[in-house]
Length: 125
Image 1 (cartoon, rainbow, N blue to C red):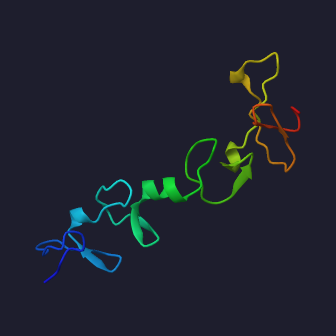
Image 2 (image 1 turned 90 degrees about the horizontal axis):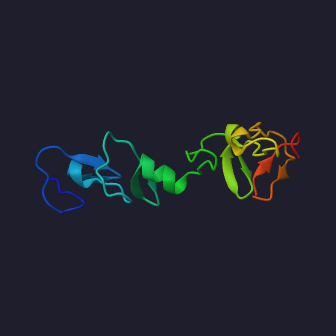
Image 3 (image 1 turned 90 degrees about the vertical axis):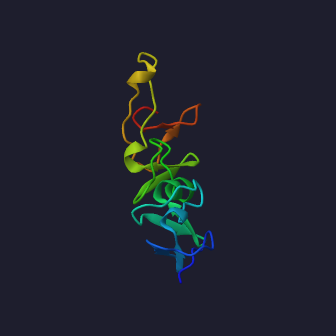
């Protein structure tokens, strides 16, 4: 007899086994959003299961430039983490609008910071 870890009832039919426990498929849920975890796509933190979306949002660095999860190389600057390709100059000259910001990638270790705490490339500083 197989018992569901969540509801403590007997499982008849499909059994889902994860994290050394057995579940009714609909009872194996994300710790955060409580939605059933489908397609065996989950991650764990402190022994708890999370859907990939919630895991990334809660435990993976997010790019300040685009808001997406960061994997691989990144830049930590100005109190935030950035994909390398999203750490861009925010300079707008007095003759251009905000829409016409420089937007050059800042790859140098030396850069300036605007009064709004935004990065500025060496060329614009």
